[in-house]
Length: 164
Image 1 (tube, rainbow, N blue to C red):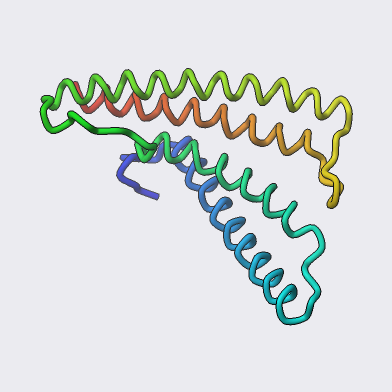
Image 2 (tube, rainbow, N blue to C red; image 1 turned 90 degrees about the horizontal axis):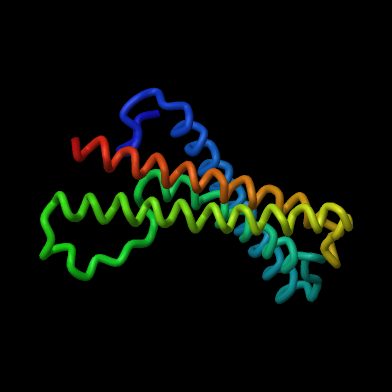
């Protein structure tokens, strides 16, 4: 699949596309869960058991699944206060520095999440209502944070390639 950030059959880009698709499917599922819960709560006085806990888990998964693709596509949040005053080369240099710093920050996030995942897995910690294994959730979030590091590296690589 050709996208603006993927000018060829690049397997990391395709993998990120699949991750975004999975996040979209989960978002749709979260929407259905919320709809059924609201209808059950207000019309039948019978909410879906564990819906708020499931929504919290799904929200974490959706957000972290979207970060790597947003990073690689250059769709991450940036503040452009003085961009119109700077030249094209300076803006690219700032984009490379910002992407590198973001990769470093996401690396720290992945490292800390990994430590937390190991702790949760060692205790077999589970959510209170759904009995969902929180260690595996933290491990998935760690994986997504590590992918985000590579997403930012892809972004920086593209910025440097465009500069040349």
